[in-house]
Image (cartoon, rainbow, N blue to C red):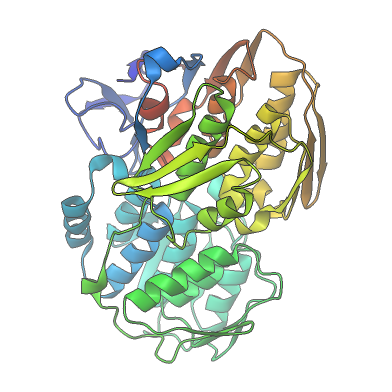
Length: 478
């Protein structure tokens, strides 16, 4: 059980027993606890938590395996297709609840469902996926829709997607900065006439293309030769085909013969939906704990189509790992007979950006140099992950690690030099909090560590603290 301590700040309301499947699901439903309700946001969560990171102890914390939530990337695509296929939000909730356990639901999935269910004001919170998908989705429907989100979301790029929608007759009224939330989109013409071919060669995000495809906005999209995060586009295409919408990929062109076809909702299937993005932090945990020989990850499947799985297999042998399929998930085993190479790991992280923090922490912990290219989009995530990563590694090593950052690259050269006590800046970023908590709990860093914004894990991995740090305490601060 994870305990929460602290007093509410002035003006906050506390509600009990609500949305146990949203933030901090690691607290058992039977436990008595409070959640902060932030007015004008459809999220229940505890704000401003810090956590004293305990050193992992095999005797105290030995587990046969770990659970991961359902992939929010797959669920987000399926939710849009189910709604487009005629299912209401309550029906979708009932369907998901009948096939998933509460810990499968990340904060982003709850945000998408809540935003989709509101007839006028669609609050995307901190979810870039919900922002892109719902902007394109509601642009196809006649009427006016307010799209809004948190402060950080207003900095996420949207221009290319909005320009395509504007060219099709959809009107946008920006309430703040141009091409940023909050804005009102108005469709006065019913089904907009989208261009027969959309040029996506300069799109900075694969989510633009996924949003247009999932919403039935075009029959043909031309991609660039070095398309960012193409694996997530491949995931979109796979889900659409599973729902009965054929998609043809020829070279750099994506074609749909009937973009407005009704998805077959009975095709919904949750097999292989365990989240590989979350699993990367368990892989980090395995690699940085010398006492561990292997771990089981329940609910995870091979050949899932998730980009973070493809990326893992490229580095699997480099980390001395083998993977075995088991009835309830996958087993990751260390190869104890071979010493890990200290040669620089060079990767293009643009194809698996969610693995960046875990990979950087693995590199720092194992003392293996890392060179990442394709990092430009990482500055526009929930935090500027390049800057935050560099800052936190410096905090752990007191400058004992060489870091070179460029517009589209990062180079880490680890060295051994530690301090006694460090506060890690979570920056409100779920992946930063998880990656550096695992690093701080390892023997690589012998000192005492406190991590801020510990509540942020609910965005993607609500059960993280209960899985890896049972019997710890989250402390709230004003």
